[in-house]
Amino acid sequence: MIIENQNDVTTAVLAELARAPNARFREIMSVLVRHLHDFVREAKLTEEEFLDLDRKVGAEVDQAVAFAESGAWEPVEDLARYLYAEETPRGT
Image (cartoon, rainbow, N blue to C red; front, side, top):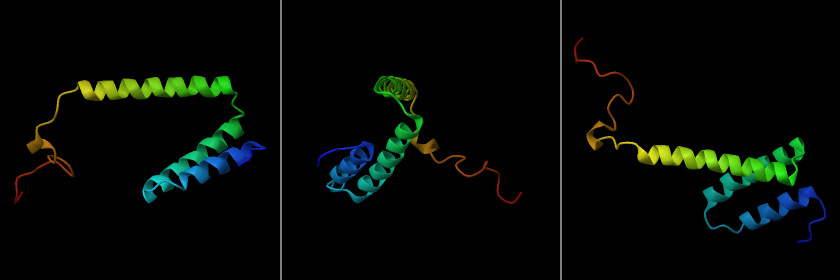
């Protein structure tokens, strides 16, 4: 595909995504691509601004993952505890 304008970029990416074997992945990524491309066009981001934003978001995600991975694991028997409401004795 020859890309002649900004909208052609979105079309080209969506065409590549259409080849993905997993239907749910195609659906999620197609929505993400359309929204992200619309955001970049509407905000008129420069390439430098986009790359800076990408680095900052990546660093924040990495930090959140590191924090989550450094935490203590919850005991399996406690995973569903208080899931919907505080436990109360029956009959009260």
